[in-house]
Length: 237
Ligand SMILES: C[S@@+](CC[C@H](N)C(=O)[O-])C[C@H]1O[C@@H](n2cnc3c(N)ncnc32)[C@H](O)[C@@H]1O
Image (cartoon, rainbow, N blue to C red):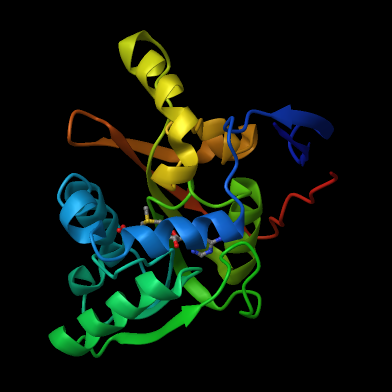
């Protein structure tokens, strides 16, 4: 399965690679209903470094209004500086409930909102946020480029969009393993075979700053400046 998109830079319709097994919103909610109670214990530590790196990067950027999409159980929330005002959204009410408990337990007063909302089609006005960050989410949403387009819409020109994610290896044993694991995407709740090109069109891929993140460069931190005047790539199919 692949999406057909209009590539702004090349001014042509291109076919982009997409994971073999797409997750729709119902599959995401069902997967994370199962994962919610064990998510922190199972996934929290392997991804901790990437999450901390991403939040450090957010903390170092100008602006105070931060949107965290796919906030999950809120593992990243304690790491934001007090001057950053955080709105977290997630499709899964089960994951969000755990984030709310964390905010209450840790008295995180800079977390302003935790909302059940689809990151591909939010209810925020254009340019609401200085920064949007998606940690381990891009390979979970049904349409990654729709996510990118929506984040470009809600981030101010000159603001920043960050992703930390696992992307498909370019070759070697890891590529074979990830292709094999892709068959379990629905029960895993993410796509092991998620290529960076599924998220970033060529023009954005050229501009983005990519930083490998431990363990073993398994994850990548992507930072993209929201260009003045850039707009969402319209889906044509
Ligand atoms: C792998 S978890 C990552 C959670 C958190 N960011 C972290 O670092 O632990 C992916 C999260 O994205 C959420 N998600 C998936 N698709 C979404 C969408 N379209 N809109 C909002 N949240 C979504 C899932 O419900 C889940 O909580």
